[in-house]
Every structure is written in structure tokens, then in C-alpha cells.
Image (cartoon, rainbow, N blue to C red; front, side, top):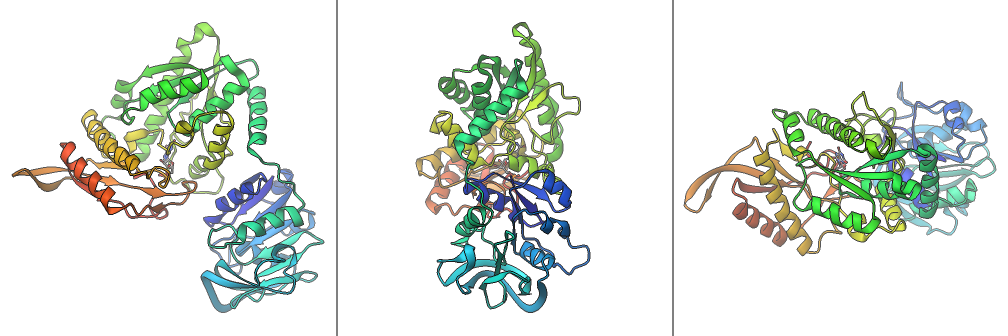
Amino acid sequence: PVLVVDFGAQYAQLIARRVREAQVYSEVVPSSSTAEDLLAKNPSAIILSGGPSSVYVEGAPGMDPKLVEAGVPILGICYGHQLLARALGGVVEPTGVREFGRTDVRVVGEGGRLHAGLPGHQTAWMSHNDSVTKAPEGSVVTASSDGAAVAGFEDVDRGFAGVQYHPEVAHSPHGQEVLRRFLSDIAGIKPQWTTSSIVDEQVTRIAEQIGDGRAICGLSGGVDSAVAAALVQRAIGERLTCVFVDHGLLRAGERTQVEQDFVAATGVNLVTIDARERFLGALAGVTDPEQKRKIIGREFIRVFEQAERDLKAQGDYKFLVQGTLYPDVVESGGGEGTANIKSHHNVGGLPDDLQFELVEPLRLLFKDEVRRVGLELGLPETIVQRQPFPGPGLGIRIIGEVTADRLETLRAADAVAREELTSAGLDREIWQCPVVLLADVRSVGVQGDGRTYGHPIVLRPVSSEDAMTADWTRLPYEVLERISTRITNEVPEVNRVVLDVTSKPPGTIEWE
Ligand code: XMP
């Protein structure tokens, strides 16, 4: 793999994705990794990410100096560029010229392998205080800017390159090309990470893991579990049974959709379990978001265990398939050294006494890769292009205690919002639009001739590429107006509709 060393910025995930877009497999690793840790993974190249620190600050994360002796090609980006330059004997200084945002970067000389033939002036995204003022011995300077004398350097013979700017962000129009060139022209890596190779590799792995055993797969109706199930089905066929848990936290129409669409597309064995009372009971009186997530995660497993007992007559179901994605793993604190933002129900919400062995064929994939895998496996667009919906469902969209009445209110409001967004043709433009009920907040309204004292509904439309970061979507006012009018008219408990205009960060996509 190509290892992306995460120096604590938002950018490491993005770099990993861009590398995969260049059809090369990549993984994010923490900056605390030693040279031995990294080399043990047999990397074809290493990319040092940006980070918020200055290389001079005491305790700033560093790179193991032994790394440059290992014969592995290295690309440094931003902070990583400075670390690499310094490790190779270059000079990094606080020059007093800070560059932030869109910056004019000039190609120097021939531009080296990374910049040759690109426009002499290009816009690139910068974010730095310190700069490399002298390139390492034996390397050539390939780019510069007003604030960074050495905005790019290369030592092709040893396989090293650095860029001060961020090639991974969309604001650096030539960035993807620069990354691609590093991988192919400096590191000599062939682009082989294609959708069909992902499918082959995962199917082989799953078949090895499960052997002649049997597996249960929880279907949520979402893309991830559907694709995970289809992959496992390809690997073990009839020995897979899908379980759809109706936990009562679903949106309108979801159950039928799974029971019809997915089964029609795959012909898989499906068991539906009505667990509405069980989940509502377990959630009674609970308001804390993390506690809700953990309860829902635990109850899912309990239901799967029950299903396993019910299916005993067919054989032993020892394996549980989950559609856990790479960002879930990282955000639940699984990508060592990262903070636990929230416990995604199928990662941080698992009980300690889990009876199953987990099969997680998507654990290393990003959402766009999962969608491509789904199409490759022949799943229909209606499933593959579905907007994300969290496993804990409406349970984490009711701010306050979850009750049957509140669920009914939220379901009705959500159905209106979805209907209007779909009929306005906005489904592909937005990543998802959580509809949230502020169950513990009330506000005064006037409807008909009387006073009302109802609850607000929050609309949270977001645009995103991978849910790691997101921006709020500027929906047309007419659409917002229709949603607001209809919800306040059609949903009795609701007398106010508000719009969430927060990006991620600082807000997360869901409210809990
Ligand atoms: P946040 O709220 O963390 O959400 O910005 C990022 C994406 O993940 C979805 N999400 C979940 N999906 N189980 C899931 O399957 C969960 O526990 C969970 N929590 C959040 C959320 O809808 C968004 O797409």
C-alpha cells in the first residue's frame, strides 16, 4: 500500500482518497508510527500529510529519520514537505510571510517530474507559516511562491519529492495530476486498484475467512450493508442469510423497499424481524446521544443472536457481516491516534460479549468506492445511489427521549421533506438531508385562530464527498418554502421549521 502518515490535519483522509482515485491502494497511519511500523506494512510509497504544527514547536510530531534510508519513495505535503526537507538536510524557517488559501505557485525551471509541462503559474491551496528556504542537497527546486522559496523540490534518484501546497484539495486544480505523477513517475507504482480488483480481492478474502461456515448479514436498507451482503453472497452463495431488523426507527416505506428491491436484485435469503418493542423499551428514558448509540448497537446484536438461534436448524451461523466503512472506523477512534467523535453503532456500539466473528468487507473502503463496487456486482441504481441513512435511524434524530409518538411525528416530517427534495430533482445534488425533531424544545405558534405550543423540525441538507467533511447545501428558497408549509400544515405537533447552516466541521452531519 501507499501509506499516508497523518500529522493531525483534516487532510490525511482526503490524500488517501485521492491516491485511490489514481487507482492505487492507500491507508492512513498515525504519525506515532516508527520506521519499523511503517516498513512492516511493505509500503510502495509513503506520503507525509499536512498538519497544524510548526516543525519547530516542542513536541511537534516528527518523522523517524531512519525512514529516508529505507529506499521507499516519499512525498511530503505542507508540514510533511517541511519535515522531509529538514530530514534530508534542507532548511525550514519562519519567514514571516504566511500564505493561506488560493496562492499563485510558479513552476521553476523544467518543473521536475511533478510539474513539467504544467502552466507556469498555477493556483494552489496553501496553509503555512514556516517555509523551506533551502532545498536539500542533491535535490532540485521545482516550484516557488511569494511566501515559499521552495514550494516544491525533487530528488528523483532517491525517490523524494515535496510540495508546500495541498495537491489533494479541489482548490488546487493540478493537484490530482501532481499526485498521480508522484505515484507513477517517481514511485513507479502501477495503477491497479480498480473496482473489479477490489471485488476479486474481497471475494477471495471473504471466502477464506468464512470457509464452509455460514453468515448472517444485517441489512439496513442502505448502500453499505447491501453492498457488503452482495459481496458475501458472491463469496459463499446460499450460506448467507440476510436479516432485516425493523427497529421502529426507520423512515416511512423503508421496510418494503428492502423486502422488495434488494431481494429482487440479489435473490438472497431474507428474514425480517419485528423488534420495534424491544428497541423502544431499551431506549425508554434515554437522552444521551452516546448512550442511545450504544444501546442501539447492542440491541442489533441481540436480535442477530436471536436470529442465529432461530436458524440453527439450517446450520451454525458463526459470522456476522457488517457494512462498516473506512470513515466509520476512523471516526469511531479505530484509526489509532484519532479522537472518538461519535460511536458509530456498528463499531463503537458493539457489546463486549459479541458471539459472532465479524466479516467487514468494506472496512477499508470509502463511500464512492462502495457505490462502484455495488454497480460492479449488479445492484440497481435505486440501491447504489441511495443517500446515506445512519444505522441508528431516527433514534439519533430525535433530540431527547425516543418515544413512539415522537417517531411518528418525525417520520411524517421526514417523508414530506424527502418527497419535496425528490420532486425538485435535488437528490443527486445533496449528500443527505437529515430531518431532526427537537423534542425537548417548544415554541409558540399561531395556527388557525389559536395558539400552538409545538416542536421545531430542523432541516439539515448537506453536500459532501465522503461525509468526513461537509457543507450545508444552499437549497432553493421555493423548495424550502414548500417543505416548511407542508410540514407545519400536515404534521400536527410541529409549528416551526428551521434550517441548519453549519458546515462539518464544526458541526457533524447528524445532530447526535
Ligand atoms: P456524522 O454525524 O458523524 O455522520 O457527521 C457522518 C455520516 O455517517 C452517518 N452516520 C452513521 N451511519 N451508523 C451508521 O451506519 C451510525 O451510527 C452513524 N452515525 C452517523 C451519517 O448519516 C453521515 O452520513
